[in-house]
Image (cartoon, rainbow, N blue to C red):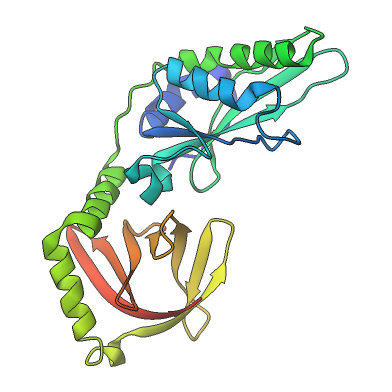
Length: 248
């Protein structure tokens, strides 16, 4: 993931275009952090509409997600609407954040002097979208996403991987000396798994399935199989599978 520092809008547009194209979806919070109620002034629904109108595949946070997005939140960017309005004008800025809460793109500020609040916010949001339009978005998954997508498919649909997982579970008693006892501590996006020396072994990202986690920076997953947590991830071109006892 690339971290972008906004110096000039034009330079950001050229750089952001290369990275935003790597994300398949946009998730728009039903309630923006800047507001005290869901979809206030219809800003969330308008933001979703404008993204879809400009070639993105956008969802509200309470919509039913596609299967791949439900299993891998890192396929999406989250739209964040900043409100810097003052007494005499409405000002909004649109940010796009990745699954690690890093800002990938910052749009132009949209300003409106319309007195009616709803109309003013609609006017400002539409103006900040002028920078989104210029990105000419076309989805193109990067290498890391392709590996992750292939792994998710293999976890859910590959019969060969299921057979290997079953064999690993059956032999867990023989392998108990090689497995590790890990303790989970909660984070904003999931958990950190630490060994007996308090060293971080894995960082987990939550999915919609409580028995499936994404392994951050590992190109893999942690999945529960017959009571045993199996870590499955790539090392080079090979899939590594290890059983763990995890205390959540």
